[in-house]
Image (cartoon, rainbow, N blue to C red):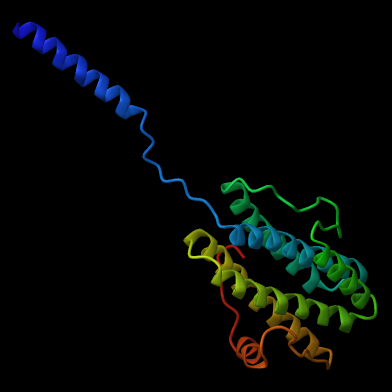
Amino acid sequence: MKMKIFIAFITGLLFSNCTNDNVNTDTVVTLTQNEINDLKFLREEEKLARDVYIYSYNKYKLAIFNSISQSEQTHMNSVLSLLNKYGIPDPSSVQMGIFVNQDLQVLYNNLISQSNISLIEALKVGATIEDLDINDIDDFIINTSKSDLLTVYNNLTCGSKNHIRSFTTELSNNEASYEPQFISSEEYNSIINTPSGGCGNN
């Protein structure tokens, strides 16, 4: 009798261990539709910046366009890592100047037309892109509480602030200036009067 009880106990213990091994204790983290939309838009918005700067560098051979285009590629990679992490299809085309989001396509076309006018206008386009990036990412930050998204957003904002400082300085060196179109004048002045800082990998 004792042997039967012991065998039953061992069998129950083994069965319990086997079933526990199959229990998935990981918490599945999903994104809201707003977060998904923001990441997809941001991936293409950073591509727009990169593509415009590559175009302007090829036209004017000014180093600032080359260096910042490389930074924008890093921004694109940061957003892509989040898309991959959450299994979101990448909307970004491998072709230069091509965008799924038609608002960004129209914006790209308009910015290229402006950049073609002169070097000064191309520098103003650069400042405009960074101005828009800062404004958009401020909105995206409101839409999430996820630490990984916020880390990328904050790094990209930091990078965009450095870039708008650089474009403003280059415009000043050419006796020109930029008036913000998206962020407030107060925020713009605060940015350009603050020294550039490190922004992680951005």
